[in-house]
Amino acid sequence: MHGFTIPLIGDVKAAEGLELLGDRIGIMAGLHQSVGPMDDLGAVRRSIHHMIREAGSGGRFIVGLSGFPDRTREQTRFAVECCREAGETMSGETCT
Image (cartoon, rainbow, N blue to C red; front, side, top):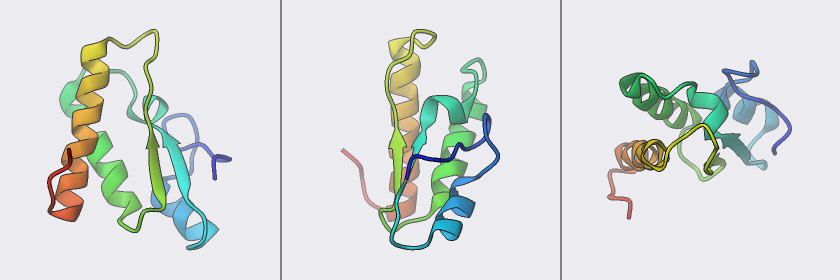
């Protein structure tokens, strides 16, 4: 399901969307929109970890990440690493 928008732009959070749509639909969230500006990397890390933790496990949540003109490669790599950290925390496994 790619038909709703999570904060900062919209008002439907990942966990809420998963609950409303039921267990037969997955949700794709655009990471660029959801983490806001990259000027506070600690806040970005917390935002990504919170979003992934809130979505929970079960494979119904897809984080969409791509390069954007207003982000450097380092910022994009940072966001990827934050996703991996959050995934490792959720699963207790190492992401590669």
